[in-house]
Length: 140
Image (cartoon, rainbow, N blue to C red; front, side, top):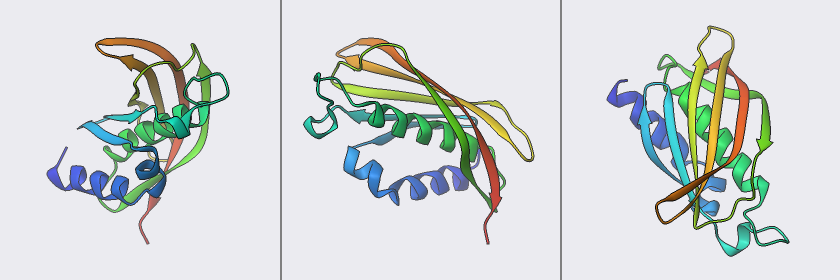
């Protein structure tokens, strides 16, 4: 992956006000994979004290989307066409870690996946699995 592609991903991520609101950060970028971490803040909790599924979905979708963007030509972006989430366990911990990756690249469709973990100290619990489709979009 080129340094230009990594910079493009970092600029795009920095432009997402929602990721800033959630306190999310990209912690790893390589060709076909992106990792995003977000603290579980008081404003991200649901009524039982776990991280809200909306936080889980938001960072999982973004990690998968940026993984897809990492394999695109410089003159393309990506958009989520569809994304499914399987919630596997309560999101209890200090932060969530979303590990996005490309499963199958294509010219018209890019199949992606993200695993989301709740981390407390060094312990991680797999809390969600997202699978989806990204579509390449030429930059106008």
